[in-house]
Image 1 (cartoon, one colour):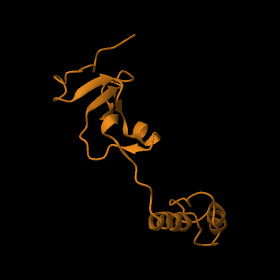
Image 2 (cartoon, helix red, strand yellow; image 1 turned 45 degrees about the vertical axis):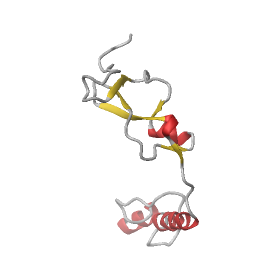
Image 3 (cartoon, one colour; image 1 turned 180 degrees about the vertical axis):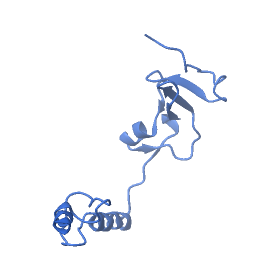
Image 4 (cartoon, rainbow, N blue to C red; image 1 turned 135 degrees about the vertical axis):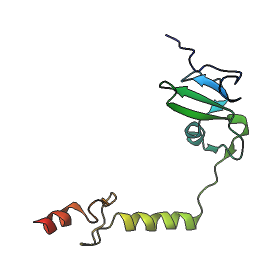
Length: 119
């Protein structure tokens, strides 16, 4: 069943911002994630519209695809910094073992070291 609760393609009811129901946005308008999946970013363009769902508690801004610009690739320095951060956050400070996941901040060390300290 089609609900027209948030359908406002002229932007009269929602402060001048074109508003559509979930899955009913016109072609050419995309969310940030949809643009990112295509290797694009909104750039500095303004928000073109929004979609609303779940009784208006959920919403997503839409941007024009034709004004989107290609994403800039990360520099070598940025990639090195991300790698360094990953190593720091996935290495246990107690046993110095690097894991394939972040060490839980709740415990401050890997689960093995946490359990040994508690025993």
